[in-house]
Image (cartoon, rainbow, N blue to C red; front, side, top):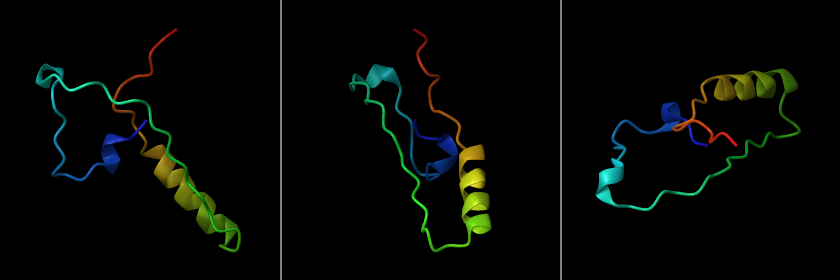
Length: 61
């Protein structure tokens, strides 16, 4: 899942009518430096995750 808030402003979402195949799911990984101050790394991680809004809702089973 990729958040719209992370997309550059010049990226355009194409409609399904273009006939392009759907893209598979993509997992992003956030790595932290174990030597970084824990409070700073936790604050940055929280800020990034709080802005994550999926492009599409997850399919229901």
